[in-house]
Length: 249
Figure 1: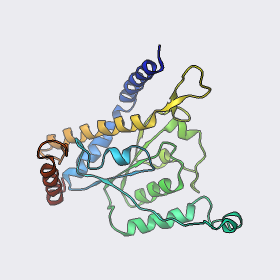
Figure 2: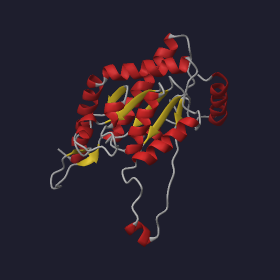
Figure 3: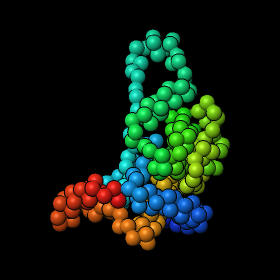
Figure 4: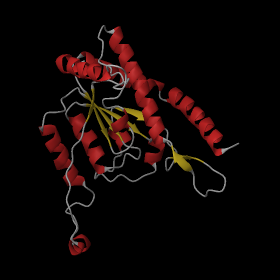
């Protein structure tokens, strides 16, 4: 069997297992998202750098309510002597993460009862854990997209020692194997082909289908984007944006 054939076979098996194992949490997330849209609330998405932050924002077939959460701060340490001899005040990012997240919530973008989807395969990043902790303190609903088994084997960089799956209200487990790469190929010493991107997208599109279904059952038609490349697509997209701006749904 070729590596390509084995890949598709593996994907089929993993997607089936993902559907079965995450059915309850997909439904819970969909209910939360539909409630938010019916109430005119955005669904915030923050991703640490993989697929979700791109796949679901202003995307054909996707929801206008999905809103990318982007924020950050950077410090240049280009001087070699400084980099070598002056350590940051908090190498773990604990206090700096706390202050940055506190500043974020002070902006008022995220409000209590808003859903906040946080995506991190490892779930160990200090900033994303701090974001989840402070969000829950403020009664924001936190949904994690993460690899529970993989993350369980890793050390958290947050001062609490917690990982993302341990501090979220709902956990969408992308079921990644340890190290994320999932396919054994003859002649290669290590597994290849990461699973998390495809798994995260599948989970979120399943959630999206569930949100739309629940909104319609509640007599609310959510704004769903169509392709910009269809005839008249530019005008349709502009109309969709305006509809969402006026209705919040």
